[in-house]
Length: 114
Image 1: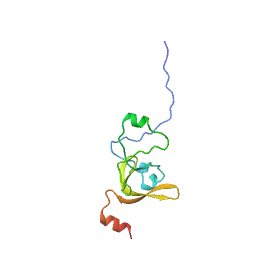
Image 2: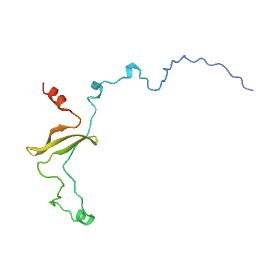
Image 3: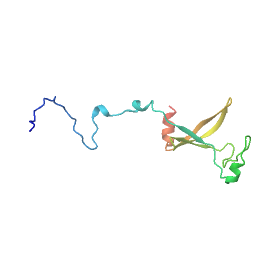
Image 4: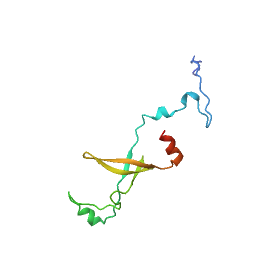
């Protein structure tokens, strides 16, 4: 028969886990998030095409989009609608000038102009 021996182990302390309670040193601030990379996309338009039309596409083909030149484009952050903007050309690159941010009231816009 084997005998069991007591083994000395160091004492450990465990933090209590409480649902919905945030331990103070784990709180995040906006500054903690400033270096998080987000994907910004601008929707220039869409087109519905038949498979045969897609197969006929060649270099130089033109795909007509459902938006009119000068129409505001939708701007998304990680796929979530954020704003509407105007497509502008600077040099050889396309850019989007933000025109309207969703959810921002007129009073918030005026406060931001100060």
